[in-house]
Length: 471
Image: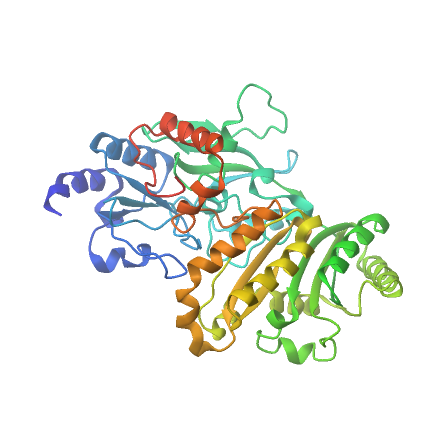
């Protein structure tokens, strides 16, 4: 570490020695990703408090050709915010950039630092009588910058879109240490290339997002939630069409779960034991938001479900009668990602497909997987309204985990081949990071890859921004 002493002293001069961590103990929590799958080392962990400090640190790193790994809440699932041993780097953590600068009610925007927790952004909007709609299971620990860097989606994409749809402007520190200030709350700005869209989803490989201006929406007066059982995935797709055709409220969320996934959640099966059976292998969680009063919203959802039952789209339903009941239903859905680990090793897939191809993909892939290795089971859940499935593979017994791990690469190949057979994508909302970097080169065509590399070379000519990730 002696060779970096002068560099670290200069970092301390910029942000203060209390915010330069280079001991193993102080760095540890920033060196491993949330899934515990990726770990690395870093020269130091740096914690600036404002865009000026970020710019000074990046400029210093650029002068010394020291790579930078931007990190927010460190909740990513692909190792995108984790340093790599082969690229000695500093981790620049943005959590001290945590100011909410403005809630503009007339323009329906919020301008805030990238280190603000998603939950705090939601609360600030709510206190002003507005809605910031991005909603994720990790919202209490993930940051706005991390959401932007992976173009996060969540459960309300169906109504409000993902982070790219929710963003009007960005402030970014470029790899040379300059500050691009694009915090304009404009919904129309046709003055050349959309620079903000280059940075959204780039996983910190082109610069460090330090602030954003995001869209806000009117708070719905009411929400109506229901959980329904279905015979097959195709029925859920027809149910979405039915709701969109016959509802004058907004279909905010439409989640699907296999019944086997649902039964993993503690207390989930007890609460729904009367619904799940061999004739109902699929469950959908539906939420409508409305400017109508609560009674009208629930009445409309009840009417829609009666119609769906009459024409054979659903087998049974539970309609929440209170906010607490609605939270209980969502808690079951949100408990699946953690609950599945009781099965042992999990081979995860974050995929997207055209909605019209979802049922065919699941049927075809299930047959091929079981032919490849009959000792597996699938754990399927996701945002079917926008075509995003979390299509996960587990052993039928935990003691077979090692056997599954041996087959991980072949299973990934099989699943992703099927995804592309049905015109899908192998990464819907988790990003590329380290986990999927090599596969990107086999799934993207040569023109797409060269365009991406051209952008990387142009914006980061010395390759200091998050090396080893995405490309």
